[in-house]
Image (tube, rainbow, N blue to C red):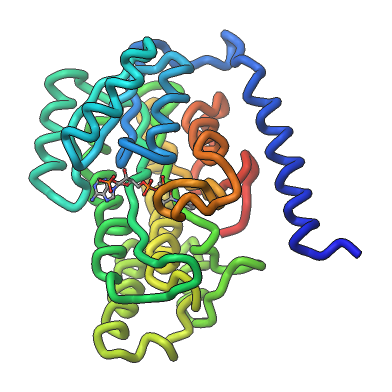
Length: 314
Ligand code: NDP
């Protein structure tokens, strides 16, 4: 008898095969809204999924800014792609450091003027395997949620007004889902609040993560109904998912020609440093949906969650 694990492995492998086939089909001139002047920024791109997204976007002919919090490591990573003939530039960016964000924005303004695509990939996770420590909760929430939000807010004024719209892509995770097989959230009040997209606000998302951090501090989080695996990381990605919906709704009020589309995606369980290289797919496959989203010819899609190039539920 084939177990459910085998079945989902079969399904995943089949979808990955379909996607690798899709990747071989070049974009037509009609679909290709970008040129070599189109600028994409990827955060945390010195390694892993971020590095792969830079490589793939540059392979499609965009100018890509590889950013990294460590200058030397970032320069080396960019050099690998530059030597491969890719149009890749480098600048330091630590999304936890407001002066680094300011310095980066100043540099972008002076060197490029505006950008077209922002991919928020930088993130941390301190849980190893099924170990579930909340020891680093503050760092995880600060980086994955607040850091992502801060760089988005700083970059929005630098996003180009164009008929095809500018794009924000947030790298999140199925671990942050509110419903479904992978959701381990047991707190019904939190679920109800974050599911109600019409009344969802940034303040509600902030309050949710603050409540979680307060319970961690008080030592009461275990009875708080938070996800039981990768708890702090799952809460951080849940918050970014929710914020993506709020952001998309706010940005959709902008006039035609000034639109910015914001979506998020789960790359799958990827063989990178974050998983101790224990994932089941390569960084190349993990990066695919993010690149596909950034380049979507149909620009009207916003506020959605994707995996393997398909929309999934939050
Ligand atoms: P890596 O650990 O390989 O990459 C994470 C990147 O984020 C590194 O470049 C890291 O820099 C950078 N980073 C961390 N903190 C900051 C910061 N304050 N400022 C700027 N950059 C920072 O992991 P992945 O490639 O796997 O992860 C990429 C994204 O994908 C993350 O958001 C992760 O949560 C998400 N994801 C990954 C999954 C997986 O299975 N791997 C599954 C689901 C989501 P440094 O090298 O200096 O540490």
